[in-house]
Image (tube, rainbow, N blue to C red):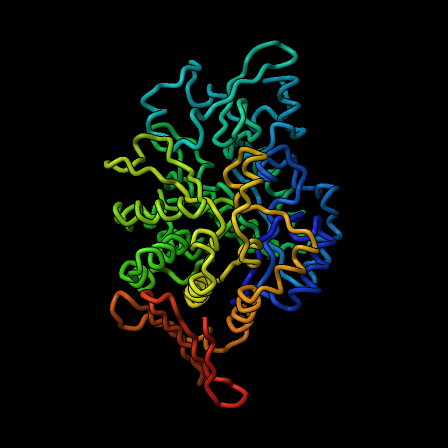
Length: 489
């Protein structure tokens, strides 16, 4: 079902303002370009985190459009949507009912009061210290309207206190019923792929980090994979974890995200050495979705634990900061490096992280497209966008550097830039050349160069990069004329 072609990632309102404008932009400026699919970041009613605190999956946020818009876009593009299996909005009807009636709510068992784990209601510090924290404490306090009592419930994510993202108890029948209902609605509305956002956090088990807890996580994935398959939907688990965990997941046949590649390419282009990148490309699983940029940032920890050298990582981070980036840091002391390195993600547009160098940016995209897997291009990256500093100043949210909303007039201007035109050509080559269904090889070369190739069906495509000069080219045969063509990056 998943096509070996390039996909687009976009918010529902980031290319024109809503879903109808998104369809217009795709048809006018990028016709037939994203036959691989469109990942529309959460278009549901939400109370925070730009869609990632959904109230429900049964409705589309009215300011974005309707399910009719999703279905219509889905007639030309495979649609990928998110399902935040770990949590739901504090403003959802489910949690609002809990806030009103507390333990007497018909939805009470959907959530995780701390007594489910600590019967005396007193979390032990030794248990907290083991957790992979995404906020200072994984709980939020709420006052129950009927009783006036304070309920402390598990909230892995959230910028506010109390959090807007309330964890759901996957051991409860009501959670299973809700996920089934949501998945069924996706199927009815022509959704072909569902990304399981934050799935690594669904298992809460004392004595563990409460992140990707084995074997329970595989039991959950097996259940939801079977459910999705019964509705002709593919699942894509979204897990920021050490690479061994990711590779184990891939070996079990799941699609995974290649969260390693964005940093590996960035490091190669920054320190001008391909040593680690080439080693990685020779060993990585092929059943991956590849990306350079997304709505968050370029991952380092824990995704690359055991793969990066701290001194190189510090050089890369320092250069990115000079180019306007900001950082997301690891909060848990136990999960920082012994030397104190604690960068979770580097935030900024990939074009800006590379110093707005057109050649370096196109080289990065070419390496991504040559890496086996399903390439995804984030909408800001599609337009080679620069850091939106004003948005960060306005919102205080560091990730807004890479979340600029483009008007149609802006898009009309950006697509005239040479770097965008060449990226579109590169996407077309990746989508249509038969060599990319063949055999991949990392060529032998010194660490100042990169040679990658695909061969098969009497066709070939070869990428050659000089890291000293940051120049590169793709040579490929033309199946129509049997001649050789060259694409200068």
